[in-house]
Image (cartoon, rainbow, N blue to C red; front, side, top):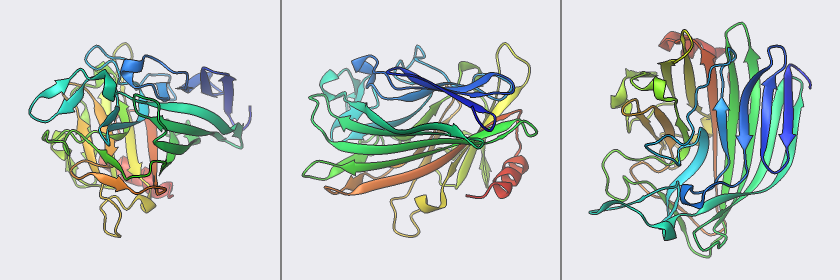
Length: 309
């Protein structure tokens, strides 16, 4: 334990990070493989606020493969590393288990808590259904800025995915496959059932009409069941992500909805496929702020200004 954070590693299963002063477990990072139909991959759940309230969902009855906060790849050169049914244009969602792959834990480079930060650095491999190696991933999750005064804490999620095929790896979404406004892929948060109809805000807009738009950050606030008050999650692109594509990177658009469930993803391939050449690496870094209470736009802006990258 150091700097107010305690990290416990149950080898082969999960890593938990706890705020030591209060004993609140901020999250569990679960890396043991689960059901093949759900495209096994590591995930964070439960994620909690500093007050101890849960702000993620796990295996909801509408989408059993939705698990907390995780990195996903819904359409990957014909494979489904998202889980569940696969979208086929003109036919809808079909049960095609031969398309469902996995993201496998390969090892940890660093698991440590020190000086007010916790770090989980992991190596993963990406596979289609037949188990072939399609990609390597270097993942780094850092917990930082734990602030009881503002009732908030933050994590930074960095992923570097390298194509190991001898042909381009094509990252897409149901929208790139023909379904309107279903560009989910990449880092994906599924909120608790109580957060349905929650408030969605961005720097220059508000509401579910932000689906498919671009912005450097997006925030989602909801009210808890079983506890008074609510919470806000802020999702932010790192500057190098070039989310609008102004410096030549592939543009990112927000997948966000508050009906019929709460979900947010800074989609890396909403409207257009992203083609990763053999040996090429896709790098993305995001910040997720977890806060007690319903933050307003000015609260988010003030926080981000006080905590620059």
